[in-house]
Picture (cartoon, rainbow over the protein chains, first blue to last red):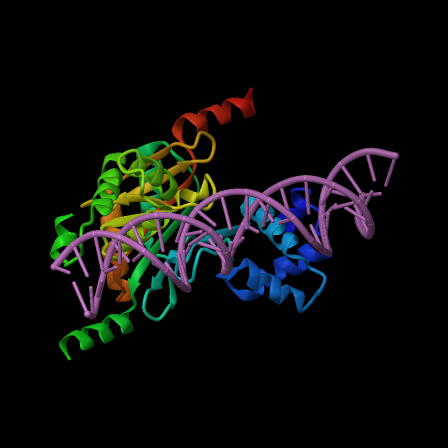
Length: 144
Length: 144
DNA sequence: GTATTTGCAAAAGCTTTGCTGCAAC
DNA sequence: GTTGCAGCAAAGCTTTTGCAAATAC
């Protein structure tokens, strides 16, 4: 929020509600769920405002956009950008999303930037597969 | 193709055309471009067949789905799954897509699997930012 | 008073689906 | 003759847009 103000962006009351809702959701919220939750605080918020605010936050680099392997359709998910980039692992069976921030990920970013000369602005590493529990269950099924 | 046959999947003539077209496109083709290209060989191919074939190939693990940072809208891109997973770097300025297969990426996959117990089926690492040339151009603009 | 934000409804873009007829084994 | 594939058109879901009214500076 402070960053937006510093960047000369107006914090309207609707924007405040939307930003706080994303923060409270603690990650992985999609646009229409955000709309529904924000409306509990301000029923006049419109879909268009949600999408326009998301766009604003995305462009300012304050939120990250995720696809989460399109496990539940084509919608996007959003989360507040954290100090440390992390990986999302989506389980095809139970739908759980795990997060990891492996040290090698940071190293990899450096390696890629060096190797390609690319100036990395956003990075998104998504993994799809089976979580520990579901992988075990699958093996039981196959051998059972 | 052999893999599909081995898996008992029927290779119809339309499916053959679609698969060959993806292969010839050498990566990063979206569904409607694929439709247009495939129609040059068989004008009767329908959109629905393209989407259903893509779905089939995806489920069988023969193609990978990419978003390429949604640089050009919400469509998906497809490429034949290669022996080695690789990273896509999308330039926000010129739209170029670069590919990298850094050794650390392979290590990272191993680390993640060990750390989480996750059974990795697909992995997608996408980077957005500025390619070497565009980053340079940007700096010239800022200092010029 | 000028610029930005909002509400509303319509449209857009991409993808999926239902159903009917057709082809393959 | 049963099973799976294709063609067509319609609908689906998510997101974007145009424009007029409202709000902020």
